[in-house]
Image 1 (spheres, helix red, strand yellow):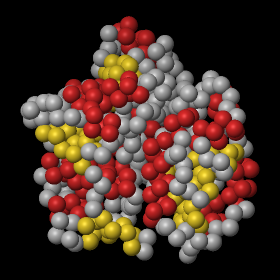
Image 2 (image 1 turned 60 degrees about the vertical axis):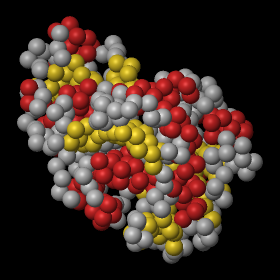
Image 3 (image 1 turned 90 degrees about the horizontal axis):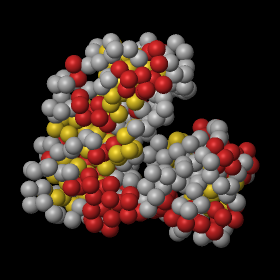
Image 4 (image 1 turned 90 degrees about the vertical axis):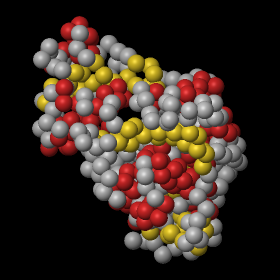
Length: 460
């Protein structure tokens, strides 16, 4: 395996979510790890400190990079003119992006890569949960903290397979290729395609082409698994290589009773689940197809998936009361917003649903992208959108008005807030009897205490 040849590794932008996990994973393998960043926040700060890997000083210092290093790994947070990166280039050191290094460390393994605009974290999480349940050896790289897994990255010498969440975003400041193009999968998944990352992929066609490239990269005797009901995924996954196995999937057959979703097996047995929603039912089907390729039988898959509680921040239960529940979700893209809000409404059809979305990403705050949200927030009884004008200024985007946002969503009764305190006051004033709350963001609603709010909503 290639990993042991790199005994001294320096990570530029080590404070990133996935980068600090890679640092910890390498440290556990006995690699001498150093790192740098201009800002490091918790949980990365505490975790690096506990492992003795926290840089003594924040900021960049070219002196940290010497010819004693075997490799340098650069994260997306760094800029192309980073002085440490320049020094590594001057010295002719081996420089990796995160996906390049993961590939280098897994050259001798079977690589399973989960791609898609939505669902990839959940699909990856389900696969990891099932494999661990049955004692299989595997490595992984996933974008969210999972229950029962202390790191988001694991690299070992003896695991025969690696499960990778295949992000379509850029690999590094100096490598503009999408991450999932670099893993060279044997088994690939495309969970669905919905235009995102407008700052990098300016048109829908350009964005879709990245997935078409991924599909075409499926090797001889490889497998491509895709959502057969997603028009864009279907388009790029049209069987075109006779040496590739193509597998389409849809939502798993199921029933919903008393707020509980149960899977229906081929033997008409019911398997009660701890997750719900059509998007999760599709994710379960995708994971089942992957596990089948890895030798997991159907009955063994169901046994394991019944105990799956979901990935962190993916339709995650915050608090439950007698007549209300509070969920939070990472959703911010239009397709995710629509799927998540509709799922919660369908799961509890007799209850009102108040749903709040924070526009926080570059795409979601871009006036040219906003029209993509039309019709995506119709399921909730009360729909609320929040954004912070200061974030717009930070991202160097033009100002947005409440009216622009309301018109984009094309919902006359949409409530728009730009002050998190006023949003919190609005939510606290609501009657929560027989009413659920859904909070969706990739941010924090600028410091709203969700635990405290959930307690007020549920009465406990």
